[in-house]
Image (cartoon, rainbow, N blue to C red; front, side, top):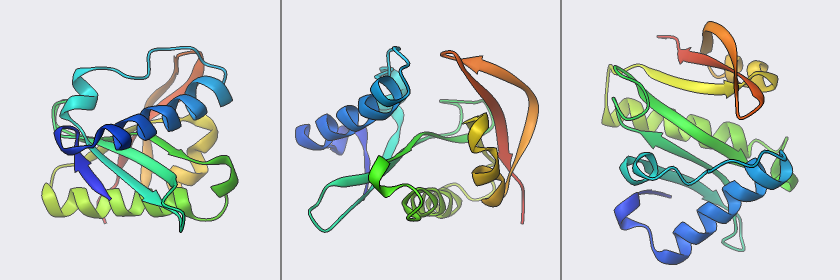
Length: 148
């Protein structure tokens, strides 16, 4: 499923925000303001569900200039704990990349990746750019999808 912020139902928005809080705030023990206002409102929200219609993987796509000048960005990439190592995270990333390349052909894609996931993002075609940095106390690095 993919929807712009303005098209989300209240229940979908609630599930997205709850899911993100479960992973980023509770699981990663990182208290920060996840709901970041204008970025969420300008974004497209993508998610996968299971047979019970439970959200199992999610990410948001920020149009060019919203996250980074000159790039479309993918952020807030998550999968449920019980869905990790099932391919759900890879699927949500592959679907978001394909969707971006159809919607904004030729515009490069950039992410701010948690460093421990470097191998995962590299396997999708992303390459690190610049130095590592701390974001909310977690080591991150900027990565850009290389042209194929």
